[in-house]
Amino acid sequence: MFSKLRLGNNQGFTLIELLLVITIIIILASIVLIAINPARNIAQANNAQRYSDVNTIINAIHQYTIDNDGILPSAITSVDTEICQTDASSCSGLIDLSAVTFEERYVLELPTDPTSASTNGTGYYVQKDAYDRITISAPFAQLSATIEVSR
Image 1: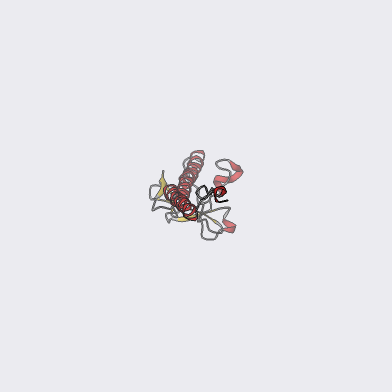
Image 2: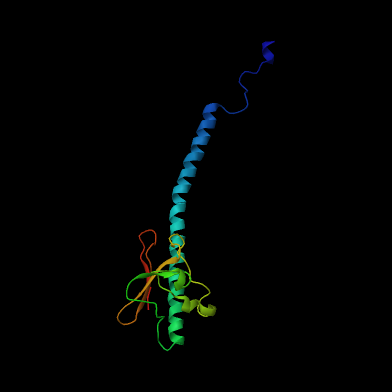
């Protein structure tokens, strides 16, 4: 009767073995998440978009200036001011660059900051110096980056 019982041949996992495997999986997953760092990757992607947007805006202004015999859009001042998304009628205190979007000649629409555009503003700032040198900046850049282009 006792010969039919098989006491040492249990199949399956013990609770300790399961807990050990789960712990190892959690440790490996946390190492992978730290290595990937999704928040940093998103911030880097946003900054790359800002670099592209700043260049798009300054190129549109430059093309406008070339086509208008060296005359800059009249709304640009020497004070660093946010650019309006549309036109001056909806943007009190912002810079109206609708001249560069008129008839979609230089740019289809002004790009907006991926995270920090205001209600009517783009999140990008423009100013000119005493020599009519234009500077476009993205003051809300992440990861302590300074994003600005002058021409």
